[in-house]
Image (cartoon, rainbow, N blue to C red; front, side):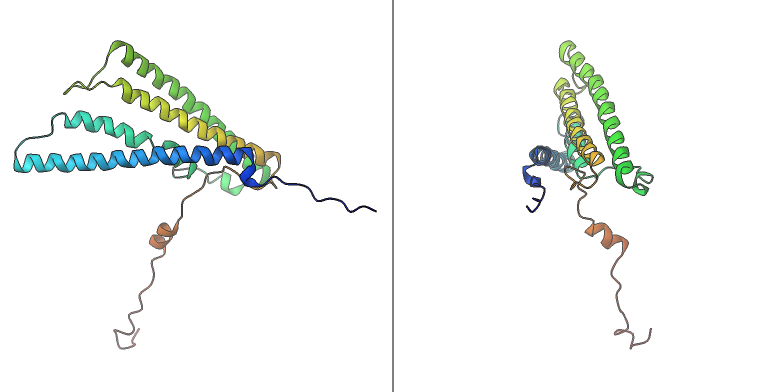
Length: 213
C-alpha cells in the first residue's frame, strides 16, 4: 500500500503575484523617496526665502510658482506607497466585522471599484495634461510650463491603479481559497509609535515622595 504524497506548495517568494508585488514595491519605495526629497527641497527653499527677505529684503524670484509645482511632487509621488502600506484612512468598520470569503469578497469589490474610479480620474487628468501641452500653459509669475506637472499627476494615478489591481488580484485569490497564505495585501507599517502615544509608560514617583502614594 503506497503512502499518499503530501501536496506540493509553491514557495511564497516564487509565487508570480508575490514577485510582482515585491518588484513593484521597489518602484513605489523609489517614488516615495523622491517625494521626500521634494519636501526637503521645499523646506530648504522656504528657509532661503525667509533668510533673503530678513537680511537682504529680497525674495526668491518665482518662489510661489516653484512651490506650487513642488506641491504636486510630494502630494502624488507617494500615493501608491501609501496604498501598499495601508497609510490612508479606511472606512472599514463593517469589513473588519466579517470573516472568510465574505471579508475577501468585500475587500476585492472595494479595491476593484477604487481602481476603476481612479482610472477614470486619470483619464480626466490626461485631458487636462493634453490641453496644457498642446495649447500652452504657464505659471503667472515666471512663466513655468505646467504641462509636465500635470503629466506627473497622470503617471502617479496610473501607479495607484496598478497597485489597486495587484491588491484586487490578491483578494480574489483569497476569495477563491481563504486557506491560502496571504500575498500582496496592504502591509501596515509598525504601530510602535502609535502604541506608545496611546499607552504612555507610567512613571513611579513613590521614590521621590517618600513612599507615599
